[in-house]
View 1 (tube, one colour):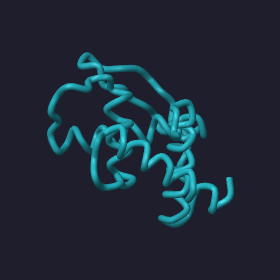
View 2 (cartoon, one colour):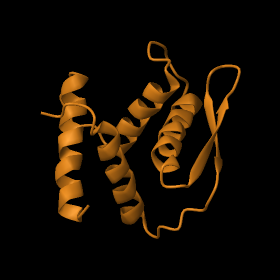
View 3 (cartoon, one colour):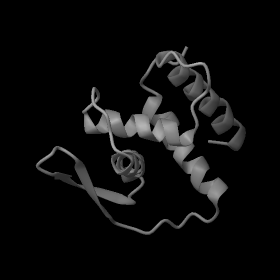
Length: 116
């Protein structure tokens, strides 16, 4: 996917999430990772501590990058939290390139949703 396509589709995802959550502002990357983490955890109607919120973003990153071979799912703990092993190191240099990879993977994640 070319950079302009990522930018366009990323904006569509942000608008989709904003509308779905009935918010006024567009969500940023961290907010969307947090929401994906909640979705993957499956514990939607509860409050999370600051540490748990960071863990939820990690869940999202692992979920998104598992398909790329960076992580391997190993199972859930007794509290239902998923865990992964890192299979290979992140070989993508630069923050912008890493963010673009995450945005592209988020676009794929939401591709099954109706974004119109």
